[in-house]
Image 1 (cartoon, rainbow, N blue to C red):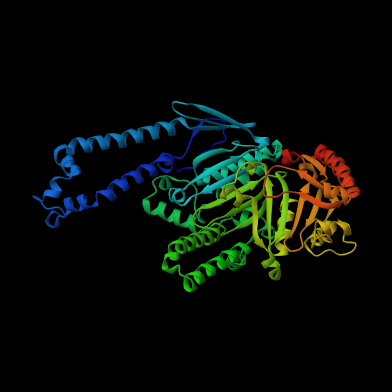
Image 2 (image 1 turned 60 degrees about the horizontal axis):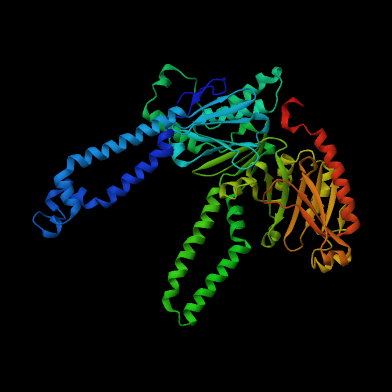
Length: 530
């Protein structure tokens, strides 16, 4: 499919293969079920000399389906053909009525045949743009583009566009959302052209008359080149900003997980009960499904995180992953509301960490896709964690604050800059009261928690929605308090308990003042016009 400028202000339709990718698969599945149930009949029609049901057999003649085919074969075939044609017509009409338009301020989508809908999304409120390429869509050179907004059901999907058009449209949407000045538009167009060529194989030349008459072999070679192309084009991001993940570390971190070991111990217990007890082999009926479920979980987690990369681009942080089905999302500046760095106890000898974030576009979703998107570093070393923090919180990471953040990942030390819980806080934090503490920076609040399972939460002051201080009866008796920072819903819960009541009150006042100043100075919604 030739490249089209989808952001020229006019209405455009989606990829021609959209009806098949969205509805044709279900139709093929129905046909497959019918064929599977008629495999004996089909075999008889193809090879009558070895018929499974020879003529004259009573049980064959009594079969109602056999009588139906014998007496009404032509009407049945015509009815089936009519149903297929009706479905094809409905899918085609639905595709014709599904259009999009991009202006300087909004992106609009119109769809529906009987029940029409017309949705608009402001470009300066875009929280991220995700491009997903399922295995089947990649075969057709198509991709699904999802424009993420804040709130429930605020996302808009364009399923499907050609791969090159999806990349070019994302770059253009981000350029317009950034508020880029007119004199910088030419450079942004060049970026859009570079990103649109990310998935296309090297060596592809300009469109000519011969390319328009491409043969099936040419299309097959192009698809193979797209499958073998790297997830991230090296020309889109500086090499020093790219963070990748090795297969060995990914597999090792999946196996060195507390949940994995608890499951393994449960399996051992079941096997011992079967060997030593009277349960016998009947326990296998419950054991085998558990093994299959656990195996699919491990394999699915590893496969989904293969070819992982996170890099800095001109329009935000780009996170990509996937082997056969790929997904890559660009998160514009200022759209990350909280960051948490955590470490499983079994990862400590290897100094591995994971990084998760709160995004407004994923605040109301608990799907596996949303969890993958909010986990922007599934597992990485400490140096890789700092590289990721430099990408998602560039204003916080400099030579002075790097040492403070590193202190938040290590055991507590005197004069490390953190205000920690008093000794009486050990009543509520048995092992972590020495490490439990906070650090207030003009751009962010840093919360350090945990001794066995360590974590460090960072909340940008410009993204803080409110701050709350609370005391329970026991905390009031111990003169302690808990502080919670409200952000969009997500995997990160920025709160800190067992603080001295006076320290908690001071943190409440200072954070409120810092947040008001940071919000007033924030210009990330128009990052290109700064």
